[in-house]
Each structure stands twice: as C-alpha cells, then as structure tokens.
Image (cartoon, rainbow, N blue to C red; front, side, top):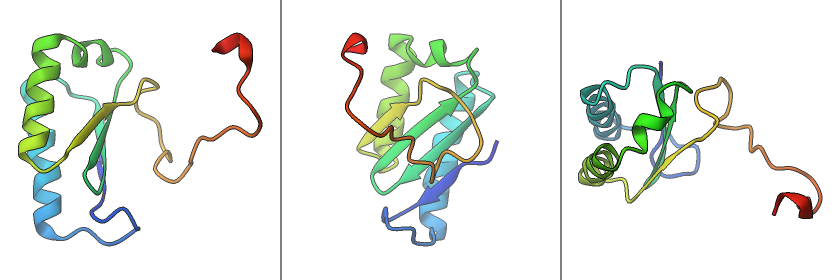
Length: 106
C-alpha cells in the first residue's frame, strides 16, 4: 500500500528526508510481519492504517512498544493506529459527524 506524507501538517510537499523517515517506519512494520498497511504521516504524527486482520498484532505489547520506539527514533512523537484499518481517501476526509455525540454511545 502507498503511504502518504505531509511534513509540516499544512499540505506541504515532503522532502527526501521526510520520505526516508516514513520508509524506515514502513520497514519496522514489515519486520513484525505486518504486510497490509499505510502510514499517514503529518508533521510529528504518524497514523498506521492496517488491514483488519493485522490490527490486533499492533496491540501486542512487545510489538506496540517496539513500533512506538522505532517511529519515535524516526522523528514521530505521536503514533496511532486507526481502528477502522486501511481504506482509500481518508487523508482529507475529516470523518467528522455533525451535531452532538449520541449519549447512548458515551
């Protein structure tokens, strides 16, 4: 899958070093057997979207610690896992819902 990168969080074009950092993070995931994924990198934040069958592996404590440390070594202060997994067109989608939250879901 293709990762996406926005180095300054303002829609700027990534430079070679930022892309290499993302590629190193991709290698970290591959090293743990994660094959179907995308990294959405924006500024100091990296969001991992993985195939639904691979998301649980990212929550194994040993894997989670190593992934977090590896991403931090590559300049990402915040690392998250998107629980919906991989899907097209989510970088700009926002995903916000209008109106107040449903109290039954809180």
